[in-house]
View 1 (tube, helix red, strand yellow):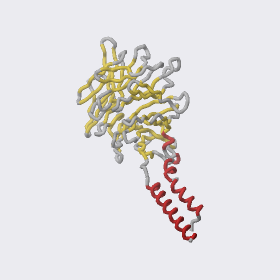
View 2 (cartoon, one colour):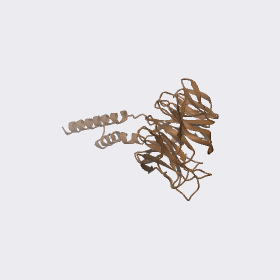
View 3 (cartoon, rainbow, N blue to C red):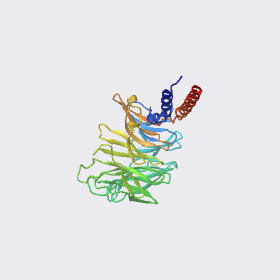
View 4 (cartoon, rainbow, N blue to C red):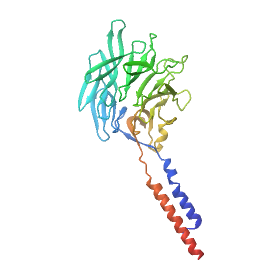
Length: 354
């Protein structure tokens, strides 16, 4: 027979199960490719693309498929892929790889669900010699997106409306500092001005929220430190980093406004997740007993799955981080059992009194 104190203790433990569950790991680590592989893009189905040893690949959750020489940077919800191979960008669809040619040099970095690819092309300009411009490509037709001020630009991301983000130089030979841009309605505009050089936008969601990295220190080193940022309708938010003065770079944003990237020094980076105003080390969201250190987060889909890189025992691999399914059953059963325990105790108490 349970004593009254034991009954109350049991009820308390069962009612505390929801709180205990909240401390469980948020993500599981799923290895997609061999050592020295990296994951760059993910679609809504959780299919991930990346590279290993100079070769592009795609993983559909169960099967790894090599795509040949190159790097696969982006994948849309139809499974179409954009990347680079040799001196040309490529577009991969239904098993057919199409090279993006017509320029001296091209690379493809991102694409949307309409099959619009964005990247960069190099060509010879009569006035400036060889220049590099951001381009978009669809169905074999390339479009030069131009520049903001100078004669160089490169594109990294495109949303479902065809709005493009990247970086464009603002003049100043020989280093040509870059500034983040947003291209929409046929015009490329600077979206944020940073005091220091070499700042770029890397991704955009369907709400025209833009992420990237900027240099806030005009009198410091030329390239570093840099900080991750979120731009939303003219409002610039410095996402920052967990450790003071550390670098942070944002590379992905989904339609729930969750941002991913990495922070820290180059010898020991950690992936981050920025959501609802909070900057989180992704390593605090996985089971520490797994031994994995999540060093990079390069893309996040609308389900919250993350594509990136994780290291363990001196070996780094492309991974997909999957959300641990919510398990309400323990809490529900705990409350039920606690209730039954209390009812039983009360009945026993009444019998004893009689």
